[in-house]
Structure formats: C-alpha cells, structure tokens
Length: 373
Image (cartoon, helix red, strand yellow):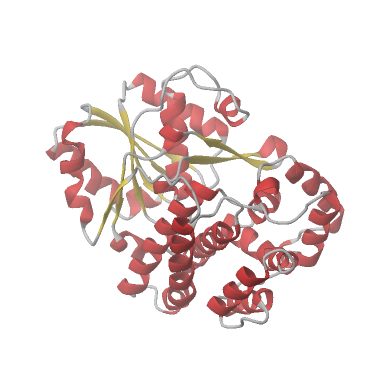
C-alpha cells in the first residue's frame, strides 16, 4: 500500500441557493470584511447585492474592491491590499472566477505583510499569515476555492507567477450552481478546459496518490460528458452543477499534486497573446500526452478511454476540443515559432518540469510547442 499525504482543509458548501447559509459560516468571523470581485459581472448579475444582504443580516461591516481584471496584475493586488488596510478588513470575501479568488488570496496576504506581492511569488516568506478568506466561485474552472495557490499575470516578464502557501487555502467555499447560469459560452468552455487540464495533470503527476487519482478520474469523466451539454444548452442546471463539482474536485487534486508542464508552457501564451488560460493549456496538452505515451502508457491509454479513443488520447482530445468550437492548435491565435525558444527557457526554471513524468530539457519543451502550432 502506498504512503501519501493529502490536504483539503476548506469547508465546501454545495447546492442551489447555498449562499443563504453564509451567515452561519461567518457567525464567529471578525465584524469587518473586504469583498473582492471583478469589474463588472458581480454587480451586473446581482451577486454583490446577495452577499451584502447576507453580511448585513450577520451584522458584518464591509467594504468593496471590485477592480479585479481577468488574469490579475500585481498592481491590482497591491491596490486591493491598500484598501483592505485602510478599511481595517479582518477577512476577505472573494466572489467571481479564478481571477477574483486568486486576487483575493493575494490581497489577504499583502494586507497584513509589508512586502510586495511579487516578493512572495519569488519565494520570500511572509511574517504573518494571510487574512481568512471565503470563496464564492461563479465559474467552473480554476478550482481556486479549494487550493493554496494565487496566480497572477506579470506583463513585465511575459509570464504568470504564483504564490503557494498553506494559509491561502480558503476557510470556506460556497458552490452555488445557479451562479454559473450567467456565464457566456466562451467563458464556460475555456474554464471547463482549465478544469479538465487540472484533472489530467493531477492524474499524471509524480505527486499523485490514490486520493488524487479518484478525484481526477471523477472530474475528468464529468467534464468530458457535461461540458458539451453546457456548451449546447447553457441553462442546463444539471450540467452546470456537475461542472462546478468537477472543477472543485480537480482543484482538490492539484492542491496536492500541483500542475505540470502544460500549465507552465501555457502561461506566456496567455500573457503574450491573450489566449484564455484554460484554452492555452488545453492546446498544449495533446503534445504532452504524445510524449508521455512512452513514460506513462497505461495512464495515457486510460485518458484516451475517458475521451472515447483509448488508442489515441491526443487525437481524441483534439477532436473533443473541436466539438466545442476550439481550434486545438496555437498558430490560429498568432503564436509564432520565433518565440518558442524564449518561452521554453522560461519554463525550464519552473517546478512543473520536475513534477512531470519523463526527462525534459529545453529542446524537448521547444518540440512540445512546435507539435502544438
């Protein structure tokens, strides 16, 4: 029997209208919080109003920072941390997709520490633990509501940077499938692709375990089945619920396995070419599976079976993406061969290399990019 460690400290509350239970969760929380949200959707769809009503009923004062952009920048985090300090917020309530929740985590850290957020992304240890955070995801993709990661976009380096700390695990997560019904189709597909990448990378990770395998398989099968349904019928409540659970389960998996090379290679594609993160990562995944066929043949065949073609998982994945209206190659998005070398050198310095099965060098990463063009 294998030995392993598994961590999942976040309390997860799932169900339609589960936000009505927020007051019970925060009954013992400090009496002042900062709501962190994106620039538009939280107000447009009434999510902020619902949260404010819950806070008022629980007699919790609040301030609002709703300036988070897709792929949040370090400056946005520092601005939010300044608001948290000015308002004397004692905990964070993050509502939105992965960008809002990741920004909320980083704000929770920087609000009580003096360093710049990029310092912590580069490995500096904070003096104080981050403020507690409650997450309310409105997309099914990142699983950030159950991970210890905060991912930011650093335009200056044309890359994404991450902070990983145990106290960045949200204290609680409220998963209401009804909140996903407002998601436009493109966002639904791109976030669903991200969740699938999480599941498949967790299943292939060197740090996988029996627990993460179970989460990864359940998530992958649900996404393969229900993302096409949500794509065709956006108001299908069952499909939305299944995708939200799958995203959360895949998030729990990568909270313990981390992500692999497709993520590292996809980061500069998102920052440089503005390709949505889930899409960029998924486009790189088939070439990754091709190479891993020599190192993890059974697992790659299993992934192929999940996708409907045990003999050729990469082809099955590309065909499935095309059925969702996604071009499964990088070249249609403007990615050029001349930048592959720089992107590969950048990726070689990331932990994703060591966690990915097989042997990798700069040339192998360049080959993976070129196979994805």
